[in-house]
Length: 193
Image (tube, rainbow, N blue to C red):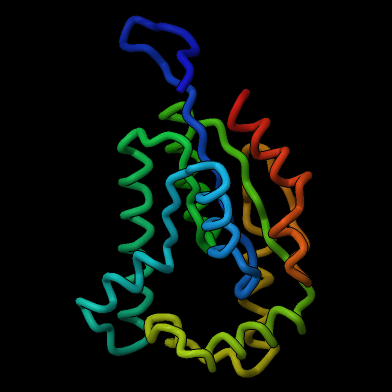
C-alpha cells in the first residue's frame, strides 16, 4: 500500500485491483488463480461465491439463479468497499456491474487494471459445452446455450462491456496467455507503481 496524499478527512491510499472479465468459457477463473499464486493476491470469483451460496440456498430455476447472481455481485461490492488491496475480482461482468464498480473504485481510490478475455465464438462455445459435460456445478446450468446463436448473443454483451482503468484485451483462443510473460510483466509493473 502506498500513501498518495493527505486531505482534511483522511490519508488517501492508492489500492490496486485487477478485474478479470470477458466472455464465457475463456479461462478467467483459471487465470485469476494463476495470478493468486504468482503474485500472492487475494482472488474473489463471482462463480465461486455463487457455488457456495447455491449449495446452501438451492436455487430452482433461472429467475432464482439471476437473483443469486445479483447477491454475489453485491458481495463482491461489499468486499471491495472493505478497502481491500491487491485484489483480483473475476466475473463475466455485466454493464451495470462495471458502472457500479467504477464508481466504487473512484470513491475508494483504487487503481484498476482490467483484463478482458475474448475469443472466437465457435471455440468459446465448444469449451462452454465441454465444461457443462464435465460435472459443472448446477448453478452454472440454469440457461441453455447448446444453440450457438443464443450463446453468441450473450457473449457479445460481455465482450463490449464498459471496462475501465488500464484495459488489456486478451485473446483466449488457446491458453498461451496463461504463461505469457509480457502479461505478467504488465501486472508486476501495475502492482509496483
